Structures are given as C-alpha cells and as structure tokens.
Amino acid sequence: MIEVRNVVKTYDSVRAVDKLSFAAKPGEIFGLIGPNGAGKSTTIRMIMNIIAPDSGQVLLDGRPLCEADKNRIGYLPEERGLYKKMKVGDLLTFLAEVKGGDRQASAQRIDRWLERFDIADWKERKVDELSKGMAQKVQFIGTVAHDPDVLLFDEPFSGLDPMSQDMLLEAFLELKRAGKTILFSTHIMDHAEKICERILIINKSREVLSGSLAEVKQRYGSPTVRIEFDGDAAFVSGLPFVKACRQFPRALEVELADYEDTDKLYCALAGRVKVRRFEQLEPSLHSIFIRLVGAAQEDLNA
Image (cartoon, rainbow, N blue to C red):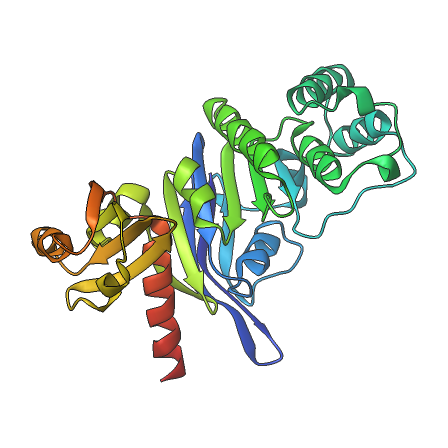
C-alpha cells in the first residue's frame, strides 16, 4: 500500500502541493484527478522520491520509502522518453533488468504485452520508427515488465487514440485483478469514472474532495436528466431550477437543483418540443468536477 501523509511542497514561495493525504491499496485503482497545474505530477514525483517533500511522509506498506523499494514500483512519467536507437525488444529487456526483473519471466511478460497491444511485429524495429501512440504503448510495457507491486501512471492516456485508450483501460483492470496497487493521474473524468474505486480531486495544490466513486456521487452529485427531442430546446438552460445544461445534437443533459424538479422539467418541455426520450442519469464525475473545481477556484480568488 502507498500512503501519502500531509505532504507539502513549495517552489519559490509558490505552494505546489498543500497538505495532501491519501492511500492507494493493493487490488485497487486510485485516481488522482485535477486540472493541469493542480499538483498531480509533483505529488507522484514525491512518491517516487524524485523530489523530497518539505514536510509530510510517503510510506510503502507502513514504512518510509527507501532506495531499494524503487524496484517494487513501476513509474510512467508524464514526460515520455525512450532510447530511440535501441530495438523495441532490447529496450524493454533492458528496462526490466535495470529494475531487477528476472530475465526469462520479464521476456515472457514483454512478449505477452506486445501481443496484447498489437505491436509484436515491431519488436525488432528501432524505437525511432514508432508512431507516438506505439511509443507510449512501449513505455507502458516498460513500466510493468519487471512485475512491480505498485504502479504509478502520470497522465497515461495523453496522446492516445480512442482505441488505444480502451486497450489501456482494459490493461489497468487486468493489473488490478492481479492485485497491483495502481495510482494514476488524469484531468479526463471519463477515464477515472470507468475504472477507479476511489478518487482524490485536487485544484491549486489543495484537496477538493476524496472518497469512493459511489460516495462522491452520492454526496456531491445533482439529479441529471438526458433528453432526446425534436424542436428548439434552447429555453431549457434558462429555467430557474436548471443548474447546468450540456447540449448535443438533438439531445440535452440537464443538471437539476433537486430531484423534485424532474417533473417540472418534463412539464416545461411538453408542448414546446417533441420528447423522444426522457431518462434520469447517474450524476457524472465530469459535472461534479466542473462544479466543485470552479467553486474552489472562486474561494481561492476571494
């Protein structure tokens, strides 16, 4: 288990991370969520002991992280970097051995992941021949090839096409089933919502909220309705009981002030548009994030 206790980091009088605390457990995917510049990467670098916190602690299985523990961790940084003149297979073998991985077992894992990501044919090709998406898959494999107990991914979906993103999401779930402790940072709510058990949202170095996904939605979510219609529904955003409105072609997702407002919304639509579908949705993490991060920003600027 990785535990972060009250960590603080300041650069030139600017507080990059301000008293953050959380824990990521074995067999769990933990999401560290926030906008760009919130402090996510700094937090992960402190976990890796790349930079030291000004105060607070990072613990692995209840004790301070030491140099030898780094081989138990797989780390994919936001800043991608590979040895471009090496062959893909040689590079992955090298990365596994540097982290203390058994050569034969690592080779089997490497081959399996190359097949899994549909890039096995590129094993004997040089890294500088890879597309950006392929290179990111290779770097992911390099992160897991030595079979670490703990996996830290900093914005792992950045730059990947939708199909590759889905492959990576499935890979995370497989690693979770294998009992790995997984922490990843993202500013994309859909990814966190699909795979995370627990999340921590930060903004401007501070915690905004934390908890299980179910707890967060129950505590902070608002009733949301999806409407598919024919006609002009532009008036909906101006209704007094509507908190937010996301527009799609011939559809709206409407966030309401109260569950009792569902009937009011339907009545307001009647006679003005032809309603083809009226469906109550689970509150989305996206809507919660937008509302609470916006509120936190206003508090900080006050």
